[in-house]
Amino acid sequence: MTSDYLRFLPADALPNPLPEPTSTSWHWRDMRAHVLRAGDPAAPCQAILLHGAGGHAGALWPAAAILAGAGFRVAMPDLPGFGRTSVPDRGALRYPDWTAFATDFVRAEQRSGTPMLVVGASMGGMLAYEAACRTGAVHTVLATCLLDPRGREVHARIARFPVLGRYAGPLLRLLAGPLAAAQIPLRALVKMRAISNDRGLVDTVVADKLGGGNAMPLGFLRSYLDSKPAVEPEQATGTRFVLAHPTEDHWTPLELSTSFLDRINGKTELVLLEGTGHFPIESPGIYQLRDTIRRLFADMTPSSKS
Image (cartoon, rainbow, N blue to C red; front, side, top):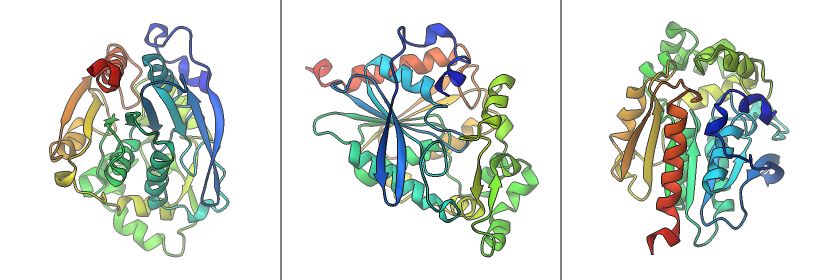
């Protein structure tokens, strides 16, 4: 499955030779989480990569390969409900399970004296923010999106149809009582075909039963739209936050993320990935993302500061 997504990136944007991925397991609550790992176990910096709705570890393998090629030790979990993570009761999944999972995974992966980068793709950007704020263990967050789900403008942008987004909150609260466990295909509710500007990649994501072709319970979607960060951005001071946002994102426009980034009361940075869509694969943005990752590794490596 990892090779299905590698083919969409320019070959020279990837490390040569490619790192070898290793599949491992992590037990969390009553679940057996699948975790893809890459990079040197003795690397001076570690990275955790969190996917969003429609993603999984295999889909983000190209990004993990770039991280490992830059020098990071990388861990990439399949969030509950996606990928190969085993979930006994899928109908009971709620968005707070994701925030708790991401937070506990960061704590489990933390190594004394090893700076940690948490990368969040799409919806994973806010998960990375949450995990950093809740643990205090993250040196830097690199997010392609910082989407605060509060507000009808955000709902209208992420929904498959804008009118559905405007009424999604009240409608899901009504339905997600008796139908909370009912699983609905993602593409029926969200604008999944806006995940990329490359039609081949879109078709691959939508057909991927581990990712964009997946279904999630209505209760999960309702709880996501009703969620708010545990730490408001004005109180987020201990971590550096880098937003690397695609300039041609037709799903979650730049202003939805910068409105949150600008409120963070700490060190922030905005990097524009030129010419790339929501799933950044195009030139020159993919090279700008690669160079940003390399720069962050150099900044975070303890020996580079001596």
